Image (cartoon, rainbow over all chains, first blue to last red; front, side):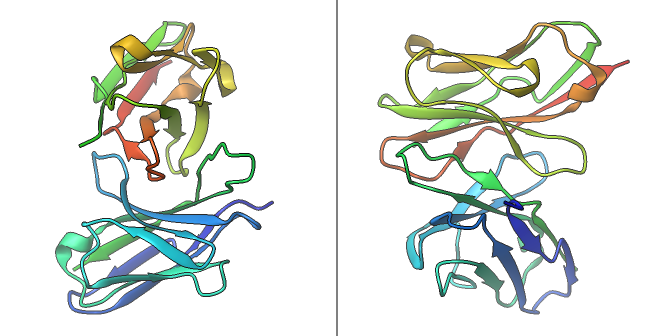
Length: 115
Length: 113
């Protein structure tokens, strides 16, 4: 068990460019979550998957954001036509629903800066 | 809407002082409660959690938290802090059938050596 990993750890991009982040959850965790965190705030929920199905999306997730988890393992989060307001830390978490008591474990995050 | 509030954004203590960080949530039903910690340059780590049972829960590194249902509170405590406890502490809740975590804004704790 190597924990949740995210790639890249940092991304600097110009406004209008597309970016894609990857998250590898703890193996055999069936749920995967994406959160966004800005300075001075706690994380805000964006979306989550159970296996490969995307079950919920926040209203924060505009149509420029898309997430996938094609084989129920790793997930990608793509932001199209980035804006300066997208600058934030993007966090991934995974959990298992076995046993009924769910605890989310977090990766190190991808820090995005849009210039 | 559900919300979580952490009363102090910044706390500065000397080593060996006692710590209590407040957390209140707004939801009238069943809740699961968490405290996470983020040490400088590191990712969020689970400190402790409450699902049911004994409302006083113990976590790692000598931390504990007490769930008081009547006060909608889940305050974090440690009797004697160390310099290594310098970090940001987040309270989070998931409520009812809502799987997402709702987070407080965090409390930055600085321990003076």
